[in-house]
Image (cartoon, rainbow, N blue to C red; front, side):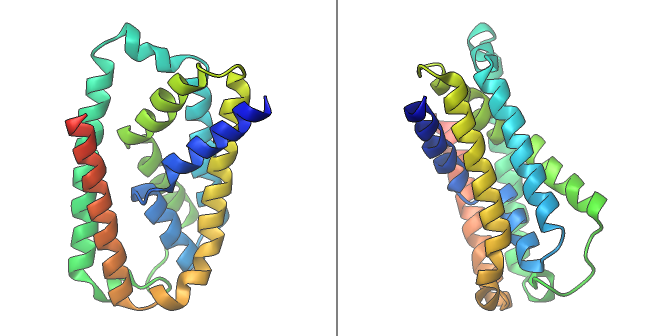
Length: 199
């Protein structure tokens, strides 16, 4: 049980560590100190639901329906390519659009809706949580322990990122630093998309 839990935590943390659209949004909200708890909670809870679905056996659905995996893979790549261009556009604009604490702050409902969209409309999230974690969990003696470890990793990561973002505030208060961050995000998303397309 302990081995399965630790393995699930390590895998879950490793998968979620890469910079992506969802993580960038959590980071941005943390820097702005805007609805941080709810953004972190929504993202972590969404991951928990998806991981639980994968561990419960939905990961095996791809074996029963051969069309499902390619659909998720190509759909995920398209989403990541598009959001990479969104990040590139932000980097190109620069200036006040990327300041962490200035400008109008969206309300709680709009912020939560954005967090949900970046989670549930990103097919890559399904590949990582439902398919990958779900299929790997089946190889362990305690699938529940493995899934619980992966779920805890999501909560630890998102809340650390959201509330730890203020430590980066002095650096990312400069528009140039935001531009560099957006370029890194765009490049990372395109690399992940390429891996999906070439898999």
